[in-house]
Image (cartoon, rainbow, N blue to C red; front, side, top):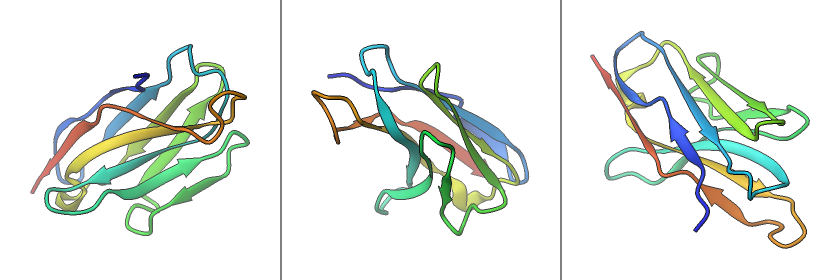
Amino acid sequence: QVQLVESGGGLVQAGGSLRLSCAAPGSIFNINTMGWYHQAPGKQRELVASIITGGNTVYASSVKGRFTISRDNVRNTVYLQMNSLKPEDTAVYYCYADSSGVTDRGYRYWGQGTQVTVSS
């Protein structure tokens, strides 16, 4: 099963910053939307931010102004810069990539998840 590779999670104090990275392997040739979800214990997975190939972005209201999503289309990598972190940002963060390829159009690839813990 092809999986995206995430890195950058960890433990940080409230007000601090973290940068998450997520790379799609070379076997995924054509990607449309990339983005991040998070899932806190006992809660549903929620969209944090997404970005299309052209650069348009969408953010959850809870992270607007604090988080910035970006991508490198050559490296098929998406980033999430998280600033002014709050304890309520604590969750497992999952990246995803929606394929626009011929054989797997519309298929959503996922990363393995990375833990982000914000202490108060």
